[in-house]
Structures are given as C-alpha cells and as structure tokens.
Length: 145
Image 1 (cartoon, helix red, strand yellow):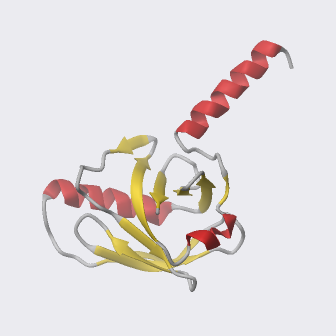
Image 2 (image 1 turned 90 degrees about the vertical axis):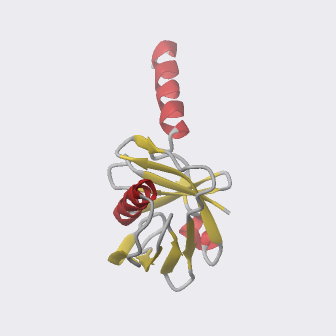
Image 3 (image 1 turned 120 degrees about the vertical axis):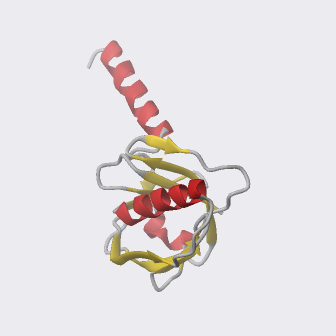
C-alpha cells in the first residue's frame, strides 16, 4: 500500500471512530458496566445526532442477571438484555416503559432513545464509555458512569 492510500485509510478510520461507529473493543463482556447506574451522553439515530437538552438526565442500569432499567426523559423503562458472546447483545422481549405523558419534545426524545436502545445488537467500550450499537452501526447510545 502506498503512503497516500495508508493516510486515506487512517483518516477514514479516525473519522468513523470519532462518531463511535464500530470502533473500540468489545465491552469487556460488559461485566465492568454491570450493576452501575450509567448516564446517557450521546444518542445517534440513523447517523443523525440527537440533542439531549441541558438538565435532562437519562439513566441506564444493567444488572448482573441481565435485567435493564433506567429513567428516560419522562418514563421509567425496563427489559432483559442477554449477552451470548463478548460484544454481542440480544433483547429478550424488547424494551418496555411506563406510559406517562409530558412535554412533547421530551416525549419525542424518549421515543427516539427507546427505539435506538431497542435496536442495539452489540456493545463496545471506548475510554470510560460504554457504547451500544445497532447492527448496521448507524445508531449508537453512549453511556458514562
């Protein structure tokens, strides 16, 4: 491979990693992320970043037994997330939530978050973050402690 081609490939990988698509390592079997309440810091839906308004806290707790729970912008949500192999994920029965209403903008954010969360099929970690990624890599949820 010539030098120009290597540079182009390196730049492409850096750009992909900077947006969280398929980079990092499998999430250490996600064990280190279990039983800790994490906070959502980034949502990408079909390659489109979804803004999280200041003051809105979205949480995620993945228990050792696979039970997931958390607080979306308005409602609480829950489900069971199985990890058959390192880095692979499978929702057993999907994600469910309580059904309270609220500010339409927060309800739209919540619907997008739950849709993206319900679509994830793999996990990866990068620095101090857990990333859950859709099969096509175009949707991502990033969590930090």
